[in-house]
Image (cartoon, rainbow, N blue to C red; front, side):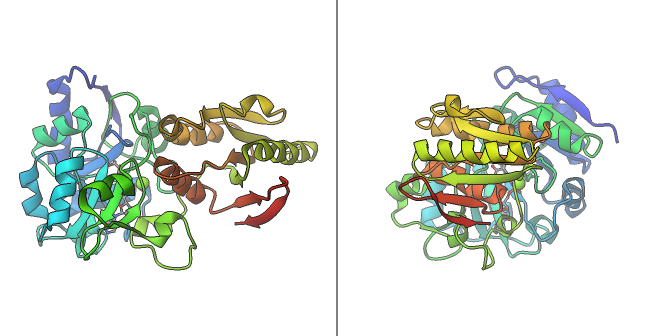
Length: 360
Ligand code: TXA
Ligand code: MG
């Protein structure tokens, strides 16, 4: 298949180009498009055959459900059963935006879109290109992140092509995305909303408008022992080709330890990469160092994370050391992705900067 690449300026949308993409979607084809979080790989959500193609193109396990993207509130009634008061408030406050809500599905939503589940995930993106595409096509668009399953999500059109060129009909290049991490996912089917995947919309932000919100243990990046409630979170994810190791502790100790480990590996003839914060970058004397952003600017770190991981895929490094990014809110979402990308390989330092514990 020949993958067509078209550029659409989000500030000045060329509807002729959007119409070409709409046509493909209406005919059951696959179009990758920008959203404010990451690029999505879209297909007609109510056409089971079309959404099956998404799984094939991504190499995605068929039990991993897709998120349905809508542009108008009245599309919701086709897709979901009961919408409770908390859900209404969350939608009012955070839609359009990086928040996905899970509801009981209606019969119209095929099981091939929900990975066999009775529930369905829905989100209204805020990216102007995504909104234009959904509106013009008149379709509810099922869209996972537009990467090969297991790889870091795409934050620019070139990432999509790296993974899916020749496997999908079209990529709409709308430039780099703004947020860089996937949406927050909240299960609204129980008494208390539960965060299944942390993201830009944080628990604190939601609690200020609806009161109590819980976080699924798995989403905190805790043990891998039990079945996560967002099926996708059980797979190895966001992973670079090299082995990624997170080093946690006081920032000064962390960079010292990374230097020591990197020096060691280089002396054994291995190629090492380091993901550094701006504050620490000059302290590294070994390996290939890529800076991800300032410790005090989580938004930049989130935006750069996946492209930094992909940059290392274009080098021959075998091990990547990364300073752990601690903290609440967006820091938690970043750590959740880093833990998954490293398969939980973490070196914890004690107060003296010595290795206290190592997990993986
Ligand atoms: O920001 C985003 O959410 C991006 C953009 C493209 O919108 N999409 C995205 O989709 O990240 P994907 O497929 O990469 O991740 C969807 C996650 C998976 O972990 C999946 O298991 C979970 O959502 N999910 C979808 N439907 C679900 C459901 N009914 N119940 C529980 N989890 C669900
Ligand atoms: Mg994904």
